[in-house]
Picture 1 (cartoon, helix red, strand yellow):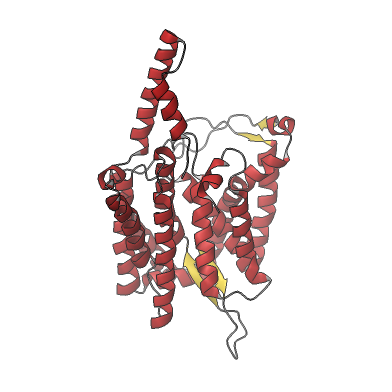
Picture 2 (cartoon, one colour; picture 1 turned 90 degrees about the horizontal axis):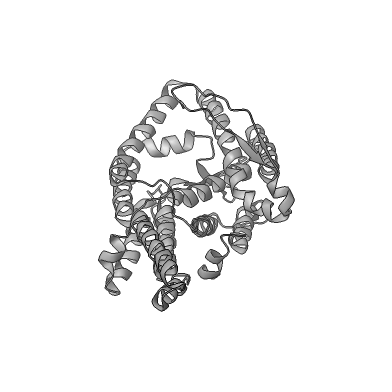
Amino acid sequence: MSSSQDAAKTDKLPCPLSHLCLALVAVAPSLITVPANLNIVLTAAMTVWVGSHRSVKDTPPEESMTRTDALKFPLVGSAVLFGLFITFKVLPKNLVNLVLAGYFALLGVLALTATVLPFIEQLCSARVKKLSWTAPKFHLPSWLSKEPVDFTITAPECAGAAMSLLFCVWYFKEKHWLANNVLGLAFSVQGIEHLSLGAVSTGVILLSGLFLYDIFWVFCTPVMVAVAKSFDAPIKLLFPRALEEGSKTMPFSMLGLGDIVIPGIFVALVLRYDTLHNARYFRSAYGGYVFGLGTTIVVMNVFEAAQPALLYIVPAVLAAVLGHAAINKQFLEVLHFSESKDKDEVDAQDVNIEHNIAQDGQLPADTVQSQTSDKKIS
């Protein structure tokens, strides 16, 4: 697969071959025997690939994480994790999971619809795409929003939402592992596509903080593993293992969505840097992720114990990207890259171009060359 080809198709059909490969990898264990460890690496790697290429857009995200947000994230995550641990201890597990499953099923309708929408739109004519329905404005509780809500849905969105709703009803009723994984993959792809770190330095802070977070909650306490085993909702992917002798229930290996989305949004940021600067750091970031996840699997099997995946993924990704940048003597340039700063520079360049056009009626030669080179994607 070519990263340049995948990213170039983002405006129309976002990396269709990569989506197909991800779908096949996800469905394969229900049809044939696939080693769970291999399935974990392939599924996570394809999800990061797809989400990263879908994140490449004409304009950077409107909102992104700040350094303060990145510093607070491990603390907030710790509070939520410990709160869930206490909740499962105090309340009936079935009741908690019923509420959580319903909540994530509703979120799943939105995530699944957004994930399949580009493909539905490709099947619709231009006339059908323009069909839309607008609901009368309504007010939410004041603590949610003080402004009236204006809700409009297009025909493709309506079709996608209907299919997604039926799928989520099946998940809620059956709790089948494949349905769980489809929703988990939709959450992961949407997270990587839409969540923005804003700057590489912010990503370094976030990954470093969650590196320590993962180590503490897995190695120093039973909290992380206990919550993961108790939480029956699509916040983790399930991978069927071979049925053990004398066992009647299928055993599963698990991978938390955080081990995909958190490194994935950093890898996606690196791809967007490559797109803007005609660089090749995405390959290093992606290779580092696959290597780190593979190392996690090897260590887990050697010691036969749960491992904090970010313990291996974070150093691998950061070392691959920043090491590559250091070799190219671009360490500080990559580290200080900010999407908002680049957007401001592009806007200023556009103003200058418009001014030159107004004065001379043509683009300067160096501007034409710059625009041509900026469109290349490594």
